[in-house]
Amino acid sequence: TQLLEQSPQFLSIQEGENLTVYCNSSSVFSSLQWYRQEPGEGPVLLVTVVTGGEVKKLKRLTFQFGDARKDSSLHITAAQPGDTGLYLCAAIYNFNKFYFGSGTKLNVKP
Amino acid sequence: NAGVTQTPKFQVLKTGQSMTLQCAQDMNHNSMYWYRQDPGMGLRLIYYSASEGTTDKGEVPNGYNVSRLNKREFSLRLESAAPSQTSVYFCASRDSGREKLFFGSGTQLSVL
Image 1 (cartoon, chains in turn orange, blue):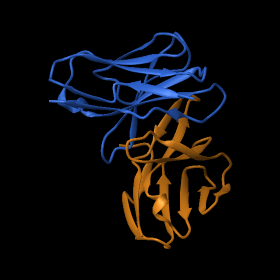
Image 2: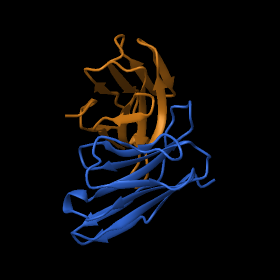
Image 3: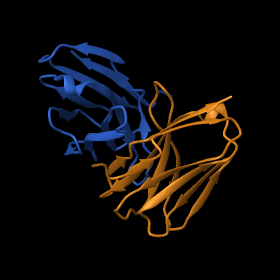
Image 4: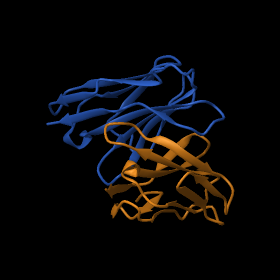
């Protein structure tokens, strides 16, 4: 069983639509991260959320950390083909271990 | 600005063969990591090294060994490759006190 569960696993939408991706766990984390990965490349960090209830915005991407620090969401407004990729959430255990969710594969069609 | 460099990019092995995946970073980071990525499984931690001279197991260490050769280099060895080890392997590094992982571009390994 994975420490972090992501949903949905796959998402295919039209350009201009909005979407939300979820990352859930039964554990409490001090912080949670979101990464984006393109084919043939390693993941790249988008954001780190630290405080329960925290909301961070990165252009059209909005990240939220749950009040209980067990879950997080990523919302994309007016998705564009350039948003296509694999979105991964990650949590840090014992200061050194980074555990990743199973990922959400997003395809934005023009 | 190379960042994290992994070699080779592609490798095909026969069952039972051994090989070492190499990883080097030029950012003077203390911590280094090895992950494997399988479809639908995200990234799973194999081993990590919090600092030069130390290594620790992650989620899926069986069948692998690691060596932190110096601060720059962290290698992953498969002593007797199995088809279940077919995967894409990623190396990552991190500066102490900072939570950002920097990844290499991966090694695609097939074990026949």
